[in-house]
Image (cartoon, rainbow, N blue to C red):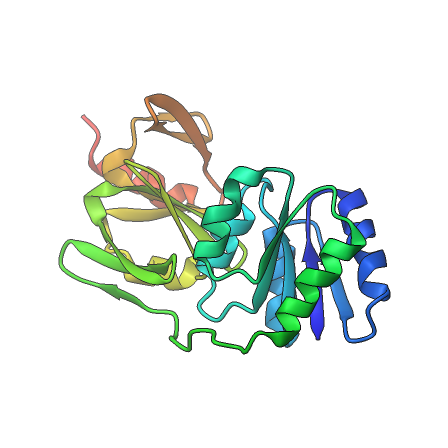
Length: 238
């Protein structure tokens, strides 16, 4: 089985690498320190099994797996037992609590090898309507009203859609989502950000200010996008 390890702790990566070397039927393809590296590894390789840490910066292991339409088999690894239920709800093969012993590791691997592949075959879908968009995430299509979306943040082939009440992470490029969101309501202000103009609280130097969870948050303005933003501001300026 071709496998990758995803963990932001170097020691954890090294321990699992040593365990994998002891199992002839496992082949380690890549060690990844975050979800972005993992996504790239999955795109470039036919991966059978992922050892996925849960607590990671920007995108958690659970959020990452939820964003995949055709996830490989997953064994979650974490130091926090409270995530076990949510992990198994994602049809994870097993849940390894750190520090991981080799015996426990081997038991999880044997379970993965004996489990038939039953991954979903749906394709990524994003469909839009007059005042909403459907986004593929969490193994379902989530409807988001445009007036609920504050901004979109791009992370390579993933986007985080920030709403008034939370966030949705989906496997999409900024370009594909930008084409779906209606202009002039939504405007690209940076290679990594699209903002809902109705949610702009202020323009502060080279940044846009929005209100997130009751607190001001600054989004950078890219130099290649400033001219268009200034045109929109001038058009609506008193």
